[in-house]
Image (spheres, rainbow, N blue to C red):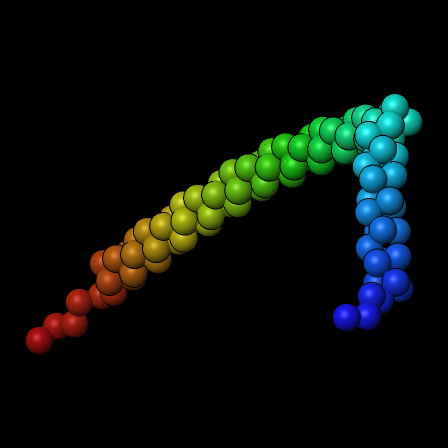
Amino acid sequence: MKCDWGKIGLFAGGLLFGTAGVKILSSKDAKNVYTHTTAAALRAKKNIMETVTTVRENAGDILADAKEINKQREIKAAAEVIEDACEEAESECAEPETAE
């Protein structure tokens, strides 16, 4: 069998690069970068949650206002129905009776 030194070289290089990569990723400088990145992500999360809370509060206010508008419309519509009924009753009572 013929040994393919190119493949063995690639394997050895990958192994060396992987080992060096683990060392780099676990170094003090890398941990410092991870810490700062995580801190930034937590700040962003806090900001997003504050925005979500504000949107929820505004949505609650909008819903309450919409319900109040609909309630006022129902009251107004009911008053108009009563007013129309009174006008009809008055016009029936005010009509002169015809003699037979």
